[in-house]
Structure formats: structure tokens, C-alpha cells
Length: 310
Image (cartoon, rainbow, N blue to C red):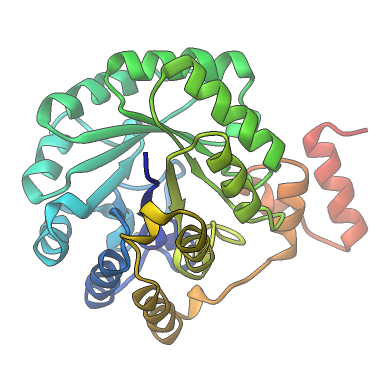
């Protein structure tokens, strides 16, 4: 199976600019993304992220009129959404589908995931392509991966994403988790990589070698903290190594999209905040960033304490 690529810039990149992408920019971005060969453009969260953020822009809310504008611009078959079950009601999925979204990813926790299973079933019955994301996968024991992956696919999830939310995965871990998840479900596996330790591309290639067939990336790597797998690099890799993928990809629009982002979204410039590197090293979630203050030695000491490292 050829790689399925999702552009997550508008959603994950929103952590850097309050999800406040102007509508005109978002539409241009999505159009170029499809021209470049992305299968899906993940345009927004539905009703916010895990932790409430005030004054969310359009890519943090995922309103129906925004979905409809995107569907008109790029066609429903390219419009993807993501959501946390705690943020929605049973009215949301039908409204999203009616507005033009056709792929939905439902984020499941390792514990207390059962409410999300009902939304998987509902999304499947409506007609969505439906998958699940396992956030902060580096903090999941293997038995939880097995349990939740089996439950999600039994409920109708068509693919399972391993989300390295803390940016702490190693290439060996990426391969192991991909193999484990495939062995349990027999379904396609995807990777959502973060770049805290500069390993996003290596992790993607390792997961690909282990059989991952879905991959998230973002333009200029724009995403939470140091960002995600850099789309320009990832698509160039596929263009060089995967003839089937290369037949569907066009690198020129990817480069044009990078220029467009840098010219219009100041927060899109690549960045490596030092606290985020420390978070990646000690496998800590972004909520701990505010505690990493002071001189560098103090920051490391705090991180070690938070991580339970002696």
C-alpha cells in the first residue's frame, strides 16, 4: 500500500499562533497542499484541544461554515478533522459530515477510552473514513497499546495513529510500536511525529520500514513546540525512494507552500525552544513547559524530578 499523507499544518501549527490562520490563507494553503499530492488536509480540531485554550481561531474550532468553505475549495474527499471525544456531542459528527468533512480522527487516551468507541461507531455509520490517534504514545505501556488498538478497530476504526506528542520516540521505538500495533489489529498504522529531539524524519523512515502506511507532516514542520515531521523533507524522501508515491507527488507546490507560509505566518518559521528539547529528552508533556524556568542546570534538575529520574 502506498503511503497516505496528511498535512497537519493548519491544525497542529495552530499551537504556535492560537489557531488563528486567516480564512483566505487557510484556503490557499489547502489548495496547494492537494496540488502537492497530500491525500488529506487536516483543517482543524472540532471544538478545541485536550486542554482548553481561550480565544481559539478557526483551525481550533472547526466550525461548520469553515468546513464547508474548505470542502468547496479542495473537495470533501480531502477534508479531514480531528477531535477529542470529551469536547463533542452526538450532533457534531453528522454536522461535520454535512458540511463536507470526510475523514475524522478520534483521539483516545490509554485509560477511559470507552466513550470514544461510541463516536467511532457513529462516524463509521455516517460514512466517514475514521481512524484513531493514541496521544503521548511514549507514555503508553505495551499492554495498553494492545488493548485500545484492538477495541478501537473492533469498533470500526480503519487505521491507528501513534502520536509522539512529547517528541521522545527513538527510531527503534517507532519500529517496535508500528510492528506491535499492526500485529494486533491487521489495520494500517500511522505516525504523528514531533521533532523535539530532531528525530522526526528518522522516526518516520523507521516506522515506514516497519510497515506504517499513513504519515502526518507539516509545512516547515510548523506544530506544537519544535514542530512536526517537516513535509518538504518527507515528501522529497518519498519522491526519491517510493515510485508509487512519486507518481502522485509534486514537489514544486510543496516549496511554493513553504514560501507562502513563511511570508504570511510569522509563527511558521522553524524554531527549537530549548525547554521543548528538555521535554523531549525526559518524555514530558507540553503542560510542564511553564515549570522549566531558571538557569539551565535548574531546568534540567526540575525536568529530572518531574520525570522521576534520580
